[in-house]
Length: 290
View 1: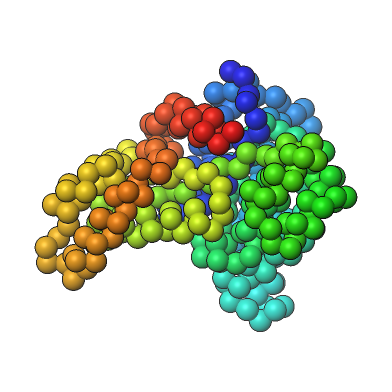
View 2 (view 1 turned 90 degrees about the horizontal axis):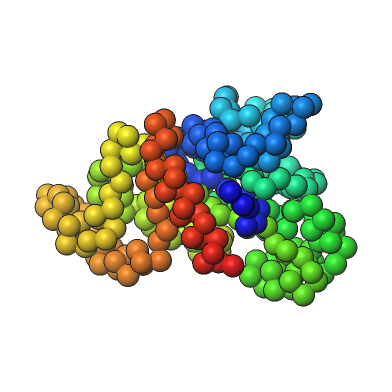
């Protein structure tokens, strides 16, 4: 199967949604879907660059090319700067990005982000990371260091504007797709489902890159596709005794139009269900955003 361009998967999700397991499964799926290129020194698939950006995790399941824990000690940072857990995560990612010199040469990149999603999304670190990922392809990062693209990004210019200037400079931006992982089992509750949809909108507005909503754990509970496609179905399933009933009704009516811009898929990291559909959706998203 031919590669159209480099695909960078930035995996974001609430704690407990199965990000680590999904990251491992995605690594395996790519290795089986596309011909692996084994590096004889590391014995890893050099067709995939795998990165862990969670400094507080105790165990990472996928094979790693880059692990932020090798550069910073989470507990030591908390003690040194007299800050809490979320502050330590944000500080470490900021310090890490300040000396980011990674040149991506592989066709795929998988990045697992912290379980403290708010520390990553609401800090400047997450936004800076996305900007860096768009341009960190081998040969591109050198140009960024020498021309106006870097200055534009540092001054806060948008990714889309940066892409336009990079195109004029002969730079081919990397294709970054944000995978927002949702626990489909928890989404059986209308209030939890709606909260996740609101967060998906926040991510879209915050990062301005293609987003694929991934309902994980469909082996335990089906993806709530009817709630996305049918407003009446959602309203019928809302608990009449809920204090949030009227609010959920209003939000569902507003989101009915917004759902049409959603790209979503249901998968199981354990059984592999939805794997083929996942790659098909990714290709469609790539074609749409060319």
